[in-house]
Each structure stands twice: as C-alpha cells, then as structure tokens.
Image 1 (cartoon, one colour):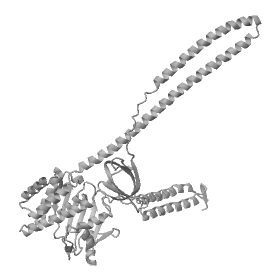
Image 2 (cartoon, one colour; image 1 turned 90 degrees about the horizontal axis):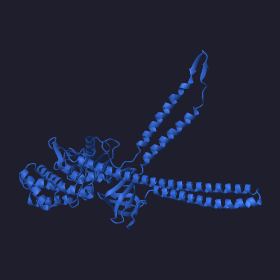
Image 3 (cartoon, rainbow, N blue to C red; image 1 turned 180 degrees about the horizontal axis):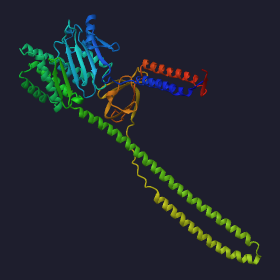
Image 4 (cartoon, rainbow, N blue to C red; image 1 turned 180 degrees about the vertical axis):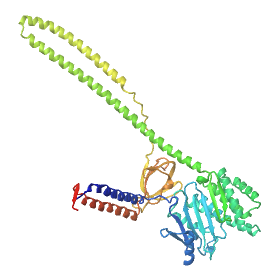
Length: 530
C-alpha cells in the first residue's frame, strides 16, 4: 500500500486564485480615465482627404500606423475655416498634407520632421507650435511622393484633432492657435519675397529672423512697438538683409500683438536651443526654462501643505481649549459634592447625640441642652465659615486654571461666495465654461483666480488637467466673481472599460464557486492497494 498526503493540494489552489486576482486588478487599473495624452501613449494622426488609396497607404506605412490607432481625416473645408482671414481660400484646393504628433513629457521640447513638404520648413512648424502652446511633442509632416505639398495648412489638422485628444503637457487656446497660423503664413510670405528679390533659401532666412526676434521678445519681456521694431532691425542686420516694407510692418504688428497676449511660455520662457538636422528636414527645439516651471509647481504644492498644516493646528488648539474647560468644570463639581457630603454627615452626628441625651433627667437635659445649643451654634458658625473659605479658594483656583479666552474678531460683512455645480464644457488659460447637470443649458463662463485651489480626484491639480465632461464644483468669490476653489471629478470611464471590469468580476465569481465546490475536506490519507 502507498500513503498519499492530499493536504498539499491547498497551496496550489490558492496560488491559482491569487493569479486570477492579479489579472482582475490589472483590468481595473487599465480602466482609469485620462485627462490628456501623456508621453509614450497615443498619437494624434491626421490624413488629408485628397489622398488616393495608394497615397494613403504610403503615408500610413511611413507613419507606422497600427490597427488600433485612430486617424482623423482633414478636409479642405477644415483648412479653409482654420485659415480664414489668414490665407486666401482660393489657394486651398486640396488636402494632401498629413501629420503625426506624439506627446512628450514636460521639458522634452519639440522634434519636427518634414517629408515631401516644399515650402514650410521644420523650424516654421516648431515656432508655430511653441506660439500655440504645444512645446513638448514630436511632429512629422508628410505628403505623398507623387503629390508634394507646400505644407501651409498642415497645422490646421493638428489643431482640430487636438480638441479631441490633447497632450497632457500642452496648454493651447483658439487665440494662441490663430497667432501661430498668422506667424507661419507671414514668415512664408517674407521668405518668398526675399527669394523673388534674389535671396536663395529666403523662407529659411525669414524663419531664422522671426525665431530670434520672438526669443528676444519672450526672454526680455518686450511689449512696446518701438522695442519690437528695434529687435527686428537687429536680426535683419545680423542676417544681412532687409524685410520688404509691407511685410515688415505686418511683422511688427503681429509681434506686438503676440507680446501683449500675456502668453505663458512655460519651459520656453527663458529661451530655447535649436538644432537643424538632416539637411534642414528636421529640427529639435528645447526650452531652457524647465527649472522655472518646476519651481512654480513646487511653490504651489508647498502653499497647499502650509494651508493644511494651519487648519490642523487651529483644530488642535480648539480641542485643547475645550478639554481644559471640561476639566475645570469637573473639578468644581467634585468640590461641591464633597462639601455637601460633609454637611450631611455633621447633621447625622448631631441627631444621634440628641437622641442619647433625651434619656437623661429633665433638669440635666435642660441644662445640657442649653450648653450644647450654645456650642452647636458656635460650631456651626465656625464650620460654615471654614466651608465658605474652602469653596471660595476652590473657585479662585479654578478661575486661575481656566485659560484666558482669545478675543474673536467680529466678522465684517462681505458678499457670500457663490457655489456652482456642473460639467466642464470648455476651458481657456484663465476661463472655465460650465453647463448644468442636464448638459443642455450653459451655466456660464467664470474667470479663474490666479491663486485658485484645484483638486482633481482627491489630489491637488492644475487647470491644464481639466477636460470636457469632467464634473466640477466651483466656489466663486462674491467680490471679484472669480473661481477661488475648484473640485473636479474625472469624466466617467467609457462603456468598454466598464464592460471589462464587469467581465473581470464575473470571472472571479465563477472561480469562487468552483473553489467552494472543491472545499470539501478530504481525508488526510488515502490507502491505495498495490
């Protein structure tokens, strides 16, 4: 016979349950909603509608588009609408330019590459992206081999798809996007005018002058038209050419408007470094102000921590004051009870003495009662005086032990703050649009205070993380009408994510049933006959 120990099967079963639980945790973690695309995640890909099937396949292969990546089609109507008032609509007759924009981490800067683009160079795209507020991304602009494109309208597609899937490190707006498109178009016109005057590579020369002028404006904080005119003149002198009068006037006006827009240049606020690669078909542009952005984020976090510490200290002081008051009241109550007990015992003793003395003779009793009455009166007066002194001393000691109350200043009448609840419809750099819970009637747009406190999903956050559909609760200052506190809950997860969680839970439930059926306790040993 052979003895088999069946008690060793338990660990294997629990190991299988632990493995399934880990798989379920992974499914739930992947269902967390995102406020924007981070580095190494999805790309923003656009393809022009004028591409033939063969040309579209060529660009998909060049961009290395995978089956699960979403691609946006850009039409001529999209580009005409984006370039309205900037570029002549009759010149936009087709849409061949296509793009692939990949999000990068804050401070990584720009990496721009072009392929079969005949007019706009990578430096122009990089300059326009920084102006628009997209400073950390890798952008590829391409056209098919059989249909090279000027590339004038490529960014219109990027800006349209940005509204659907923005990068987490970007911070753009309609106003900044329009300035970027104006800057790109005017720089091309300057370059083409230089080429018509006999300057080879005129667009590249114009790009260098405009980029350096913009860097001077950003780093030195220029805002006056005279200062900006002088900055352009300095770059013209360094490049060895003069911009035609008409285009120069337009450039001074554009740069003046750009300087007065109060743009947050983020990591590019201290300037930038540019490297031209691959025969000017590629450029890298990295901001030199990443330390400034990090210091700003650190200061915000420290301010939040200081406010929380102050609230905790105030609560602790209030609790200590309350405990001291309760202790003093308890001591006073105990003293009074002790005095009452002593008085009751004295009365009982006097009554017992009177009962014993009643057995004496009437004459002796009368005399004794007279003497005792005098003594009792004097003793009572003495006892009452002592009790009064003790009580007075106890009250004085209790009053001295009580902490001196801190005067509380009377509040001044101020307008009550306004509470608003709804769903994020849109946001800008310093504005937030909210709709009511039904999502039909706008609740209004509110200015955001520069010292606003923002909490998103229970953690300190910034305005840049908000996306359309987030649920928001606002506190609006009654005096300024600005948002002073903003509590945000992320938009609900997509239906597909909820289905994955449901299937995961169902799987664990099924395994639980199987485990219960196998839970019957087996005999510790089985006898097997050989």
